[in-house]
Picture 1 (cartoon, one colour):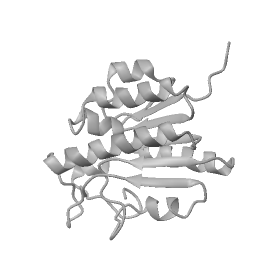
Picture 2: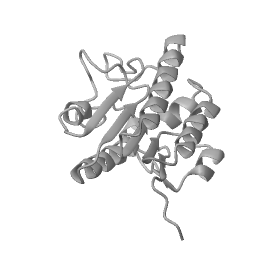
Picture 3: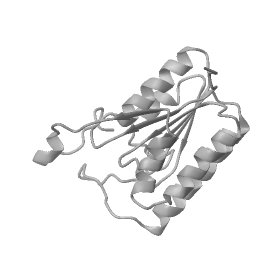
Picture 4: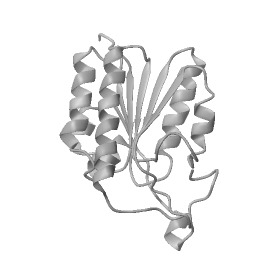
Length: 186
């Protein structure tokens, strides 16, 4: 069987650990001397008072290029902001445009679209827009490993994937009303 250059990986499900899996893959790829583009969707802006602590380490890794889009979802009390604004949709669209540029440039061995599944599933972008990025990747000859994370992967996306891992929530302290904690959830 002919081996293809890049594969499509999905990390989905209701459990905690999808972004963590993507960060682990990025570290492994960088450890092999390769380049990674790590795009985060709907996780606040990239700069200023950045609440996502993994970015502090990711920015320091030679070979990793971090791009973030979205408005902050954290409230001052440690809870999450829900709902979708026009600005949320604009930011998600900007993130997908950046993803297409990063894939088309061909200089990365791995491209990670963290929370791309979620933003489509929650209506910040259309599912077809995410599929169009995947079609671009395929038309470019699968030039890199492509990794998508987020809740709610849909059937067409799972059918297109080479690997699907579902993170299952068996039990979570959020269910008892506990807030997100620095260094654990962000």
